[in-house]
Image (cartoon, rainbow over all chains, first blue to last red; front, side, top):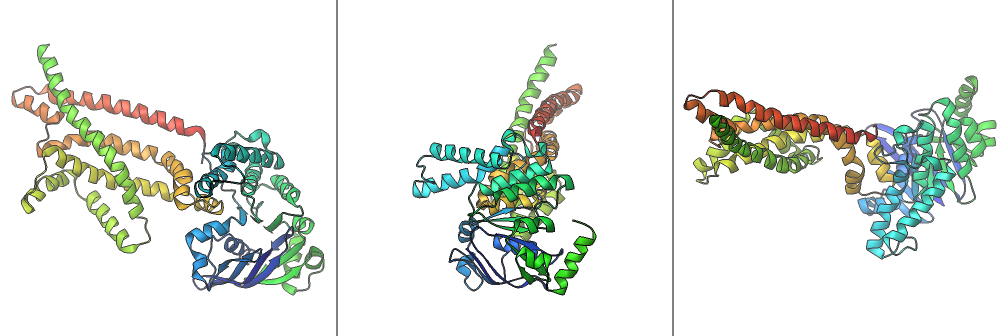
Length: 267
Length: 214
């Protein structure tokens, strides 16, 4: 499904991603762990085209979405279309504060529907804006139920707890049906007692056709939910494998050291 | 009593000119200020330098001087002359657009980068991100500084008398020449009432925008 080849990214002289390659099958959950500054977040931002890598290739389902050698894949309109293969849930939610929960979720699909109807005369089978809007609303209701916030549809983000805000952000990302949903440390900005509700929602999304990449510091969660783990260190993939391989039986000295620190302070 | 109504009527006529300068300046300086704020944020450095220099000059010189420049320079140099009201409005629009642009710039730059990125990853266009996500948040942030500036504008309109626009203070001065001094002080009442109404309006807008935080 996803093929990442030789991604390189530097900020000035600081080489954050040195040469990252990995692939992901449909329905798989990949957890990326590693210490701060190891390049995990930058990698996720490259996948969502928030950063432009200096080298490498990104393909989804056999289509090359990004190729550093091919500048035409870096045009604004191209990027905007390619982005829709990915969804991103941010560390600090980034909900739109002036919109209610429901409006946060339907804003992007509604704009998308308008554009599609104008260009192609149809959006997901709907041929009028009214039909499209109704479908978008119904889907949003389903998503809100899925994240357990149906009764909060008319609340503003400022009236929600951090955990609730993050669950809305998850529903918002899902509303565009991305092929691959990415989470950038989704619980790092939350009080410890709120992380559980968010992690449970993510766990609940795991199914045969939802492909996810989770950057996380929650080693226990990664162990439970991920099919594969990547441990990153210094802009490189240090170790890769199943949770049993990487977390229970790490081979590399760096991985062992990192996990030892986690075990020491409890997790 | 007749004298009082006569003075009131004359001052009101003058105040009509103040209101006209005020209204037209607001109407044109807000969009122009928005355009200037984009210019001062652009990544195209030559344009940015030009815009920032322009803002520096306009904010760095007295509005009174700018009124003289707009009124006299075109006729001295090119032989074109604006009528007094047009010249006053041009000077006010340019001056206030420069100030507004800085308020807009501050407001736009205060919006967290995450709001833009959230729009981007949801496949929104730059214009959609600006108008659907950012603009509303900018408006909420700039109501207070804008109300300050707009109230100042009401009072500044009386500066137009330096190029002989027959605004209210000018009208009051005509009575002074005739030996009546009180109409000059009476003008303050008109400004106070107008600005009082504006303050109420701004408080209302602030309340209206208070439905969310952030």
